Length: 219
Image (cartoon, rainbow, N blue to C red; front, side, top):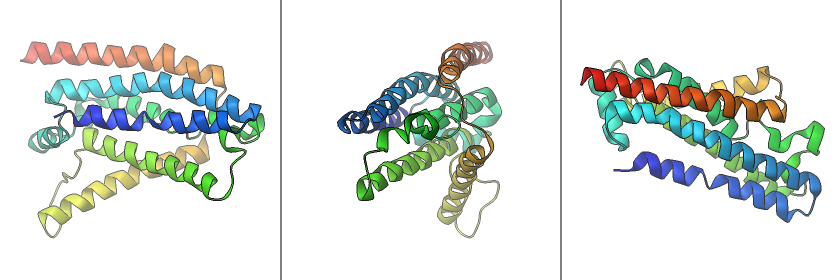
């Protein structure tokens, strides 16, 4: 019954790997990358969590199955929560340290950042974790905002149709990650923190208040 909280709790542990990896390298650039990552992830986790609260208010449940069933009975939550979806996507990019928010591994400043002293399989593990995290946040967004396995029509059999639609949605979101990385330049660190605290967080709070007011008035 607390599926949403469980996913957030599990994904928030990822910052420990980057911070401890940077500290254990005994390299000042690695340490700076780890410290940057800890500040960045903690800041954007607040906006990420608050962006999802609007969906929880509308569906009335933290259970992922209930959220998907609500969207199957009505419409995808992205139509109710467009601002929440945009805030989630921006915060998710910062959460997984992807460009333009990859300040933990800024080659021009930190000579590759937290993983500079790692090679071979250890280096591969860091980047496997980053891409697995991308898939996780994309699957979570597809479940919360895009209806999960629910599609406009059934393909072959119901269970296979759900798998196909869910995969399509996740792949589209992953394409967005790659597209943004290839398009936008890296932002400056102070601007990254300003965006998180002065813009995303107040907008997420505003979205929660507006959603709660609309639900209360229409109840």
